[in-house]
Every structure is written in structure tokens, then in C-alpha cells.
Image 1: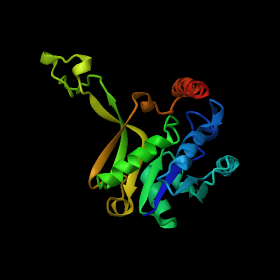
Image 2: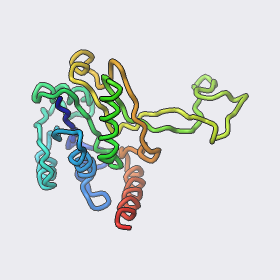
Image 3: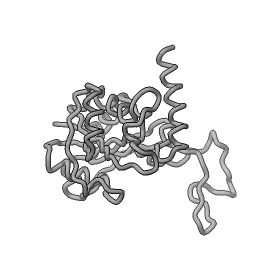
Image 4: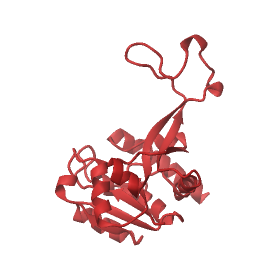
Length: 223
């Protein structure tokens, strides 16, 4: 059974120019997840889908044995979905399971991927998403509570919270992607990650926050 990782890396970021290859905490942003995927024992090969020759050159310079799939320009627009990139990849490469990883989640580690893939197989899942548990109280627009009873407001230590997608990765069996044209379907599992991994880099404020987290992470490794 073949499990591949796919990291979509398009060149046209508007909020942060050249975001995917911009240096953060000493490495190009994409290097963090590419290293995690390459080090994961349960991933057989790592692929990047890109429309950018500059991104391809940066990926090659990392010497991680990552393969590059050329992405058509129509699949590299703001409107193009991640699913469209996954479906294009499926037409090019054979696999049983696909781990789609977002470069904007550099706090992802190889240990997370290996643990998730073990759970994926053990529970015989069809697809899986990564999430964080948030202990915030949410409300609907109509003034009704979403995830707690205001008349019996729980203490934080007693509150189980709510699971929220963090967008770090998704695992999808090939037949599910073929059937539903979607990253999620069939028997869906959730892999819970640390709360700080909920930060995705979409704006400059996110970038500065994640840079500080990565610097702290690097410091802990050195210690």
C-alpha cells in the first residue's frame, strides 16, 4: 500500500508575496513541512505541485528528494480549490493513500504525520483531518450558544471544548477522492494536534506570530 504526501505550492500569493518560499525562522516556509513529510516513516514519497519555476528551484535546493509536479496555470488561481490540485495529481501518479499538507502550517512535525497514519490504518478510516481542541465558547448569530449551556457555564478544566480544523493535513484514500471528488468522505477520523498549531499563515500578523513560535521551537532543540 503506497502512501504519498502532496504539498501544494503556488507562486501567486497576494497577502504575503512569495509566501511559500519566504524565509521564516531561518528556512523557506515550505521547507518546514517538506522536512516533516520527508522524515515521516509512513510516507513513501513526497511531491510538490507548483506553477512556479522559482518555487521548484527552492524545493530542489533543499536536497530532500522531493518530486515536483507541474501544475497548470488554471489550477493556480485564487479560485482554484485544493481538491482540483489533488485530482490533477491523482491523474499523474498512482497511490493508495494521499496526505495533503498545507505549507502554511510549519508547526507540523513528522511525529504528527506518523502517529496520524498509524491511527488511520488501525481504525480503518477512509479519510482524516487534523484539528485542535479549543476551549472557547462559541455562539450562533441568532444569540444561541453553540457549544455550551450558558445556564450551566462550565469551568475551563471541566470543559471538553470543541474540535476545529487547523488545516495542517488531510489523509484521503484514493477511492474516496475518486468517488466524492473531495478530500473528506466515507469513515472520517480526526487527529488532534497541539493548540498552537491552529495558527495558519495567511496574513503578515500570522507570519510574525508563527516566526516567534518557530524560534522558540528551535531554541528548545538546541537546549
